[in-house]
Length: 136
Ligand code: TYD
Image 1: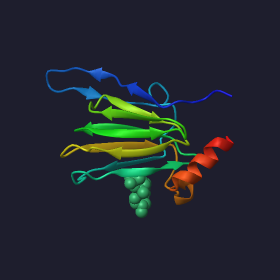
Image 2: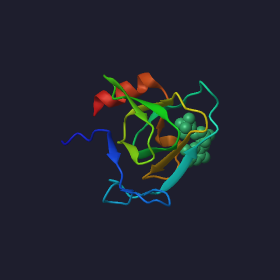
Image 3: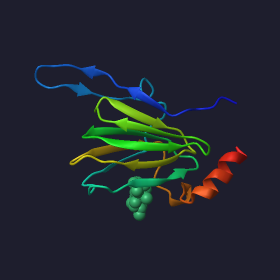
Image 4: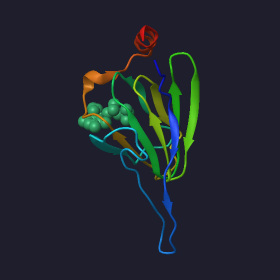
């Protein structure tokens, strides 16, 4: 079985004296079709978001403005990815525990997903996540 890993996807940049432009499309940049878009903003200093995994949902996260860190855990190892450019995004496959932290003032996180919102897709208990992950 091919293991799908999280990865930073570098998006096209159309440089222009009038202001720059970036974009993503399925399937040139994004590995899934978008079913839902949401964004996280006005995060008070020191707050974290996330701290859960998804059974099926995949996501792509961009720091449209400002910066924040994403801590990913695959059930064994942890890695931290800092997003601070509006032309870089992090692709997160299903079944990764993720936490968003260290938000800068006025940061804006854009998240696109391949699924509609479904609370049943969330795993909110880290020990349960590790058990399920090791069954795969
Ligand atoms: P949640 O995913 O737990 O936030 P985060 O992981 O970013 O900390 O969602 C917080 C609340 O918002 C929860 O009550 C469900 C609701 N929600 C929706 O209704 N639709 C959505 O697309 C998302 C992402 C959340």
